[in-house]
Image 1 (cartoon, helix red, strand yellow):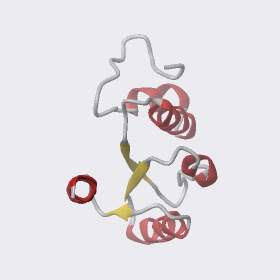
Image 2: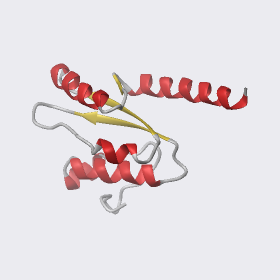
Image 3: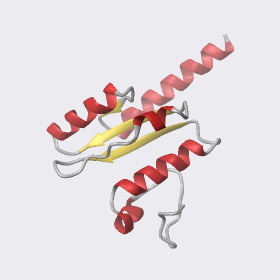
Image 4: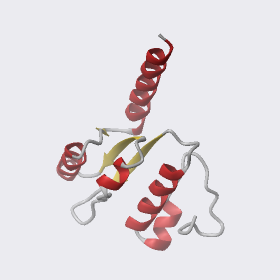
Length: 120
């Protein structure tokens, strides 16, 4: 991955913090999300984002939609910024969850339901 330090092991889940230390916030998110969207072995993505009054991650929503994969976001930070940023994500069609555990639980239920629909 072009933003990963030599010593950093890329695994699942992907921890982008070492990349952030070298490149700032935006580029590691963009490159990492794009790599996962392009990987045919990945069906869905949960992205945890930190926001503050000084920084908010704004992906290119139209670009994300082109891949047709399920993408859930978790936004953490000061309450007001979280609600404001979350509203923008949701207005663009991307669900936002209060924590990773909830996002994974919902993803599991949606996946189970989809599988039942396919087999019934």
